[in-house]
Image 1 (cartoon, helix red, strand yellow):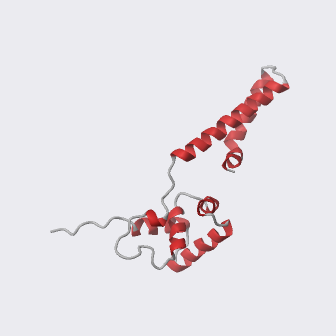
Image 2 (cartoon, helix red, strand yellow):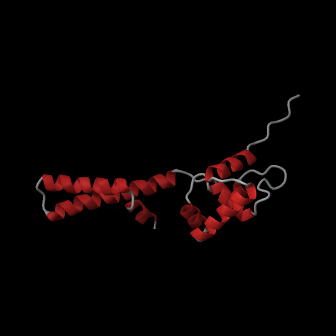
Image 3 (cartoon, one colour):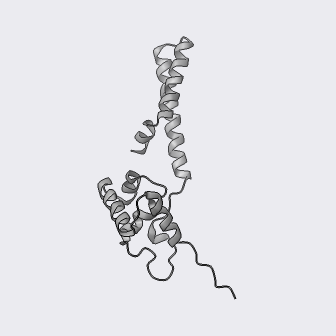
Length: 140
């Protein structure tokens, strides 16, 4: 599934087209052109999947350090999970990670915005960051 998402990448398509044009310009036959195009796409997909493994997404809410009480009040536990993932992920990626439908994630995002009186995803990410900032020890 992720490999197909990488194939929709316009950079991969541009590289593949450039490889095909270079093969045509050099006078290669159809098999060489196809092989060059396929090699570029496979390399691009592999690189994209490799980069996704290297970048670590934000941890779900239950992995975030808790201060006293529930940091995510007035949100539900599931809304908190979505709120934590909102900074680095699209709704589709959140849905895949939490094994929910994209429409359900849309509803959770809208509920979060309504409960917190926010208007943008970036505001949700800032709210999560502020709520999970370690509290400083009191000054003597």
